[in-house]
Image 1 (tube, rainbow, N blue to C red):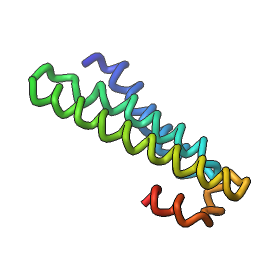
Image 2: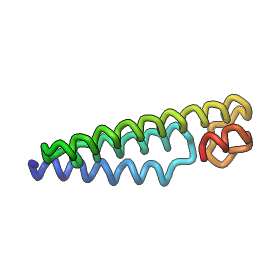
Image 3: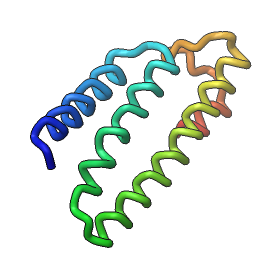
Image 4: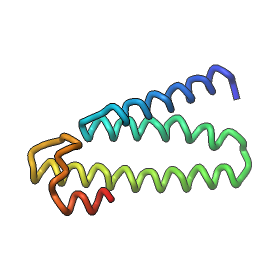
Length: 99
């Protein structure tokens, strides 16, 4: 892999983690969590071995399902409470979906 590309993916991974940790809004947390797979998937799939490709596809599918649950949980919470703040998770259905 090109060193510049590897540096870009590593920087994107750090950026996504930093955005996720420092956010207090559900959409920003989701954005940070979505940046991480965009950086990790090319690093996993860089060897063109069938097991690496299979692992990449499995990682992508699990991450997509988790992302959908996170968005659905945060939208349900925002719908019932009127708040997109992470600390205002008061709806039991949203808490169960998030867990």
